Image 1 (tube, rainbow, N blue to C red):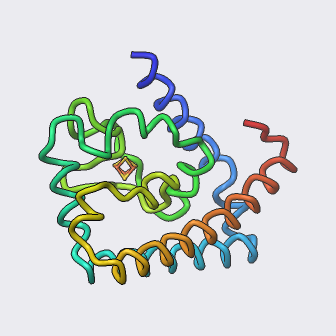
Image 2: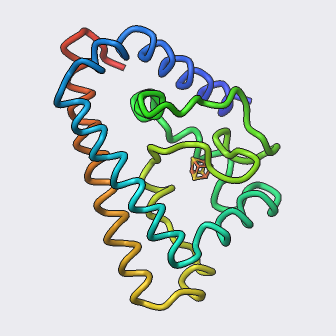
Length: 170
Ligand code: SF4
């Protein structure tokens, strides 16, 4: 299917970026600082989600509902090579293929395999979540999702500008 081919092209481009630029970028203090900040915000988001009990609900839908619930196959097509490259820089080895047929390419056996995620994956709250959590928890979640996405955006801007200067215009 064309959709899957596009995802594989992006994975391959991300791996090429990693091969060609990982070592140079690892010596850039600003990149490493932004990467650490982003990783810390992702970690904080995980803690907030754990505290309110969200991962169990999302993992259930993603891995037990045919088509992956919110983690459907189309979502993987929204991941560009830059965000996938940032995952590689965070030591996330992109799995070679999706675990569940018809679901997101990046969904593993127990849930999402990525750390740096597209805003839909971070932000989207389904009706089940709205029904299950009180406003205080939802506000906490939204505030932390915003902090994560902002840190990710700053890193992405730096990375894109850096790569542009190296002649990369994906
Ligand atoms: S990237 Fe992760 S969170 Fe987003 S749809 Fe795929 S498996 Fe789900």
